Image 1 (cartoon, rainbow, N blue to C red):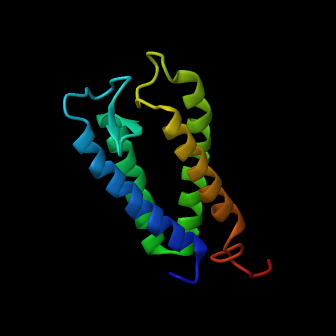
Image 2 (cartoon, one colour):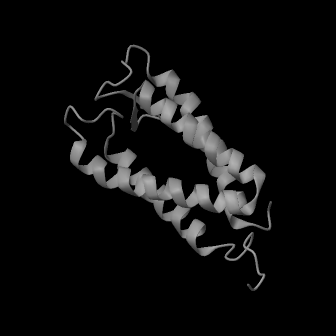
Length: 137
């Protein structure tokens, strides 16, 4: 696993996002599932229950892919990186509105854009050709 940047990144990010998802529940006492404002995780990241569950699902997908194989980790890193890029862009427009069902705030946007850059960079740039057939037709 340590020889593949994609597997290593997916495993580490997966574990971190699982931990963040679990820790988020400590900040959401009295916060509704889709509340547009949430409790503060680590004093800066706004989270609601839906946001915590999203972190748990993303963390699980990354961890499972990272522990399986290179092609799976590349696909999951790239897919989740793209989703985070879109979420970062959309988040800029929904923050402060009734559409903010993830209770996003500015630090969340920074984290989502940062995650997107790292996941997409590694997913698209590392481990090229691993897992692909090299047979000529």
